[in-house]
Length: 65
Image (cartoon, rainbow, N blue to C red):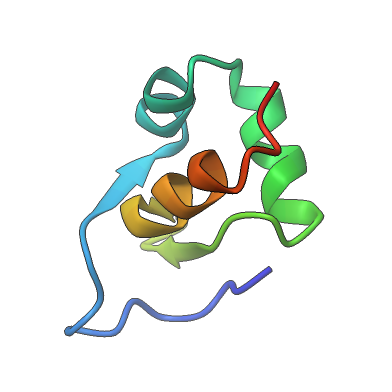
């Protein structure tokens, strides 16, 4: 899990709710995926933001069933 400052060159970030909708899962699943290191997230002004490319890579991995 990466919880660092958002680098300027990083791809678009989503809120946890947006990430959940993107994958078709609940917010708790997103938090678990972050905790297990399956997707990459950052803290942005106290809020968790999820990297869009990390979500797409997770979906492409076939681990989402």
